[in-house]
Length: 326
Image 1: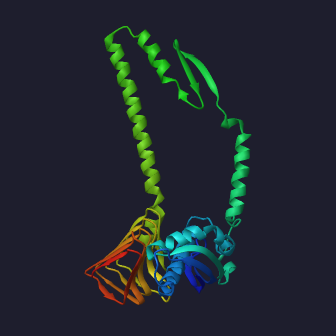
Image 2: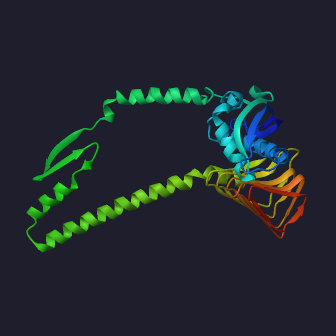
């Protein structure tokens, strides 16, 4: 089956100027329904899911610095597999066999006070990666360096690849130990060193993971409801007491594996809250009003739940997604 795609993208947020930019998308779609069914019946939901997925993926790429507003149109073909996956087409019983999208951003350079070059498109990024790999191969610091030292009669072997040969040091210390007391003391020092090393590695890993979502958490804490809020990846965010009124798009979107908690919020938008992929949104108290949908969930892992919330508008769940409450 062949179909045309046309509609709005965004608004998406320019990470440099913090302004919101919209655009239009046109293109074509080829799809099949291996399990049978009426292809025309599912087309409106598939069309809406693709437009929402396109906005979500572009927002993620902008936030990660992989594209800039002026480079979206040229980079879009490289992200089409991610757009198809984010649309939840398989949960609708649809297999997309072809997708051609052309995006036109509205006045893209007006919001770009870039102090440096634009992010490279994916093809240029791949070329840069190959160039860096060739440079690394010619860098002597990337090759193993070995050394042997004699410290207080203890021969210490080390290399840039394997580090210090602690096994050989331990054997020499055994030979030099004159009593059981000395041997146990050395053993305790080695154990403490290993514990400290492992603890340091654990702390470092935790800081890396915790730091990954700190930027999104900061955005959630400072969100004023005047622009759409989007989270993705493994983010966990909480929004408390915000009043949001938007003229287009979804007020709050959770994609990827993001978990978002909304407490005592007041939302009025075409789409109040939207969950994509494995995104989960919990709304406690407050009110959500949507002229198109108060809540929309797409994908088998997507979930939206309301607890004591005043909900005005229709809800829409596709592909095994769940909407519970109020």
